Length: 404
Image 1 (cartoon, one colour):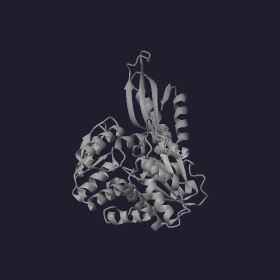
Image 2 (image 1 turned 30 degrees about the horizontal axis):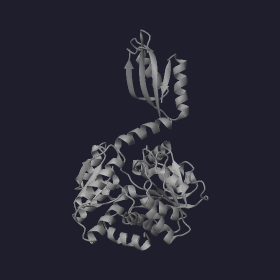
Image 3 (image 1 turned 90 degrees about the vertical axis):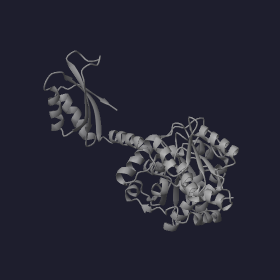
Image 4 (image 1 turned 135 degrees about the vertical axis):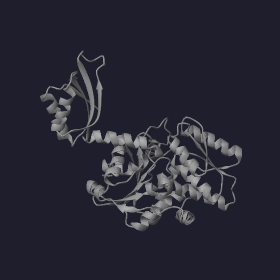
């Protein structure tokens, strides 16, 4: 069984391999929420995620037992890099099965760590099935991303560090997908500080563990869809659920917009690049999901990883600017004659709206002959400034529509 001694042994194995990541006070977030919040920055961990801790501990145990025939894993990202790193460290052959749709950057990241990548299946579950079958056929050890007590013990070392830095925490907020991280953290926390609350945060688009927690039994979902791909787990593991039911106090769900706003907040206000799964705890704090905690409670939030796809990050930034009234997208109808575009641009200069993107269309079938559509993206300074832009366009006779 997973216990404090096992987590302690895992910490010794990790030694100098895993960084003791910062656990730092977050003044802006604390002021926003009325809580005393500290952020555990596992986005700064080696390989960019807490997953290194569990994968390394598991493979270290295999090496101690003389099992060096090779390890196999299935992953679309963070677990893959952790396994690849650990396999290389111990001189063991590593084979990682990844979905065929995995971005090239993630494939290359695993290959650079020395593991062989096999692309199989259209999603994680299909890749997982291929990996398990391959491991059995080849006599290799399969390293599960969460449903393994040595993996959970490795993840639990994170909580030992948090309590060393802040021994009087009232609560810890932990992302939940398959449940390996929160299981290890909860066992460590309840062993050292039994009164401390452990709060799990899952994504609305991957609610299996939350539903299982509420029902007290494993419940699988038919599909998952969330930008928090690190916790996009479809099926509930009975192994981790057992620990969660015993040691976790509360589970909450956050929606996609809340996750996106937390990613943008961490990037802009905390100068931290955090992936969707890593941002769910901050999303919960920002959007009232921790309101049951007493004002001034000392809360540790785990930022579990920082390996966000740059395309996704760009999309989140773009949508975030629009939602916070710092970007405005318009289609303006002009008379298609010399000087019309200059007149429009001059008006934008007068209202101090900076044109950052522009397109000119005179061929659309919804246009009258002699008219043109100008599509523009404007940098604006808030909701009042956007209303000023609208009124100026109306006053000067420019028909327009907004795009969202």
